[in-house]
Image 1 (tube, rainbow, N blue to C red):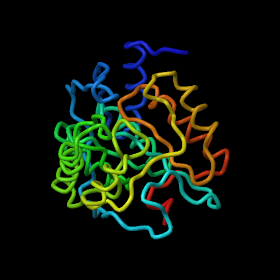
Image 2: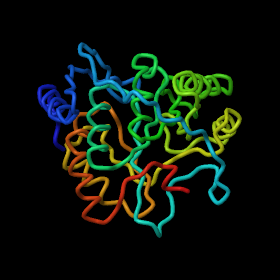
Image 3: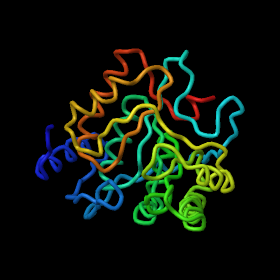
Image 4: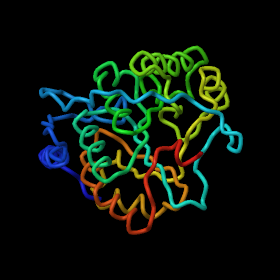
Length: 263
């Protein structure tokens, strides 16, 4: 397995962030084992969101889908690239800009405490034509929590999204699990999310396997209708993203928001 050193990570982040038109300066980061992402130590200003704000969509009930959704229709050449929203914000800016340059859209599942630290990123995601979802308040093992604590995790992130964008986000995804427990599924529905969004392709980018492995992990399992799990906060993901988009083009697959994929 290829490991990326701290020096390599910084170099990759600088290269990825360089695609942002106004120029994004990246900072060093350390692994955050509590969130599965990276802890940011920002020292630079980032490009601001466009002046005109895009309306924030709200959750919708999709009658032809189950309560927990792992993939979309297999008969349309579209896929959804979904990102865990946490870690160094430089990776978020770099990946959002790369998607926009390519004409693709992504879905970002934000962690509530990440929004506390970087509130402008909620609007940055929406104003780039992307989609926001709820990935709990603190990214703990929500399926193992008592009901009151799990409810607070879901509602805490929903409240932050609502305050920043006017919407609780379009989807909920449980933290530290691909599927929600029956209890968490019910709590998510009670909080306003008719569906829990899972995935059928795991990039394993959070293991830092190297950019080629990230691309290979995705492309080995992807097909029309797939929902892919990726992460902000990792240098390998930034380095892999252009190659991943190229491979999608080569296969005739278009990256769209999850709502676009499913409706």
